[in-house]
Length: 227
Image (cartoon, rainbow, N blue to C red; front, top):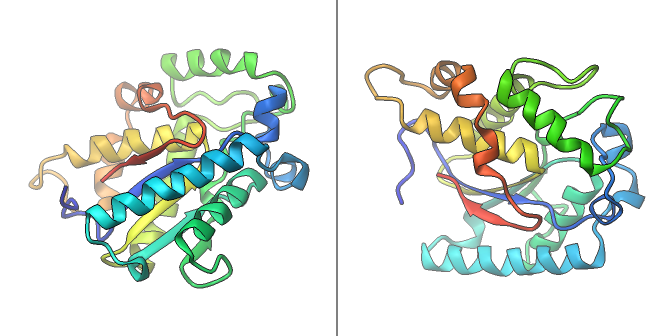
């Protein structure tokens, strides 16, 4: 699959492996809580990250992509940092080296104080709100469109710093399903109507597209080719 002309790199997404918050059924979405080491991967999540790393390696070989062309960009949360570190070790890339980069704009969607550290059972409330209006924020938290704004910034960072690379984006469920939604819609824009990346993303920041992000949901530890 070729890279669309509006992107300089090829992208894969990886949702972090099963985390300790996943095991406990907790929503951990603030940066302050998310970076705490007690919220790293559970042992099952480490295994998922290792499997994802092996699958990514297989796909790189099938596409004749050398390891020096690989970049791993990840959210600063403990569970994504841990996942990226495990994948880097499978690929035999130095995690502290130039091929691995933390990007704060890839962090988890903040669901607000009325959801933070509460049960996963509350997620459907948020997703129902998203479907109704992706521009509505959970109280004190981020709307789908708020997340789009910073994902656009994250993509701009990757697109400006790298060219001709295979980029693995290690992030979280909501940000990754939102990222896939906007990239899928942007790739369907006709060349004549929208040229560069920023204008394509602006064109798809509309309720009928953003409200459908759950269609791109990922399981923990799931790797997916995007573009």
